[in-house]
Image 1 (cartoon, one colour):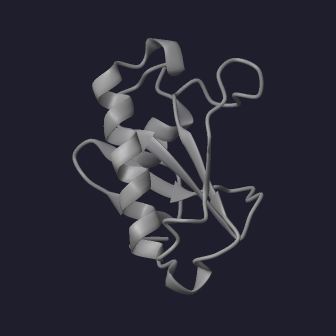
Image 2: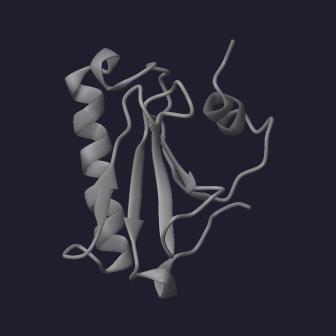
Amino acid sequence: MPSVFTRIMNRELPAKIFYEDDEVFVMADHRPQAPVHLLIIPKAEYKNFYETPPDTLEMMNRTAKMIAKKLGISDHFQIQINNGLGQEVDHVHYHFKSNRGMDKLTFVQT
């Protein structure tokens, strides 16, 4: 059964989409814990951090850097990854958080 993130990527469920390409999907967290709280999700489904290939994690890191640069906050953000404990969706993802950059936060689709 596809994860809730895959269902969102397939447009079966609504989301505020910040960025998307062939490999990654970035959307607003539906329960934000910071003024900027985005989820960086690979399109390929991996259950957790340990199952995720290094090249996919590298791509997620590049995406985080791109987001920070786009929002003008390359010196002020936090990345969190939950593995097992605290992981609500069994599809690896990063939480990208900051209390800056809201003025440049625009969504391509809501």
